[in-house]
Length: 351
Ligand code: IPM
Ligand code: MN
Image (cartoon, rainbow, N blue to C red; front, side, top):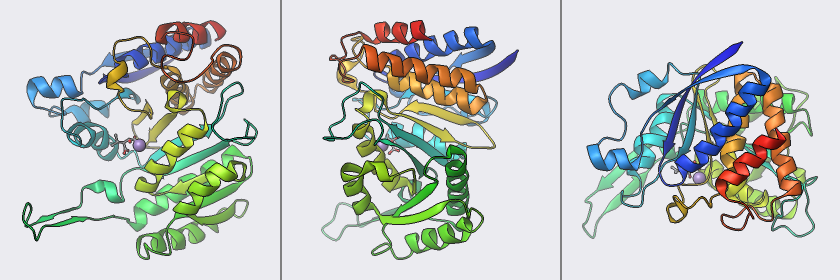
């Protein structure tokens, strides 16, 4: 029997409630498809930080590297200044574990409403591959004369040939294996960011020569936003840098019905990957059994696929689709017609 060691970080706000339902379904899948999940929970998050002043304790990264995957809830606490937990925990894990791919599917399931008029599940089904360790996210830059009228703030976008190339290769390969429209769209801003996206574009076409079966397209990020709304059906796989990827995947989440169902994978193909709902910690819903757990359940499905348990992963997706088409009224917290735990039970039943 396959057995996997999984680190669980429930985190802040509604993170723990989400993770509970995700794990409920994962354990159900383990039983049915005959594999074992050995879970260990870590208390990293806002509460721990407020008590100890520590974001991640010493040795945490080395310890997490021993696990095959990390199952994450949410990071972000209303009593902690923005940036501390995000940088200290979430981004730190992505960077230190070198999870250089952030994979975010945008897929509208039957029965779920999209704000796009006249668009349905056949139109909204693409994947965004976001570079996850570079760009504007590295923290490079600083202040000069802070707090004075002459203050200067610099925030630099770091793009390395190596970092860009490995992300692009992954995207081409992913597009090939996905085997749908076989079209990879580079999302950039070559008309203004003439260094960063020059590197991206040159590398895109160079690497693309190794993938003659994949059609290459390029679009500026602002145009991508327009087309995601106007003609989402034209997209198959979109690859982009860290910042643009962050922004367009929130737009993508809305197209697929909302944050309640949007899941993402932070992948290091050679190391420890991390799976998470892409919405935040939703403090106002904390502890109310109101939040939609489907995003965490879908993140669990992505984790199983990554671990090689494809049958179980597909079964989870199918169960989620059935629940969407037969049961849920809306994906929004409090409007689903079910509580958080009832929805978890429902998915488990169909599984
Ligand atoms: C996301 C989040 C994070 C990001 C924040 C919380 C640092 O918005 O996962 O998309 O910007 O990457
Ligand atoms: Mn984001």
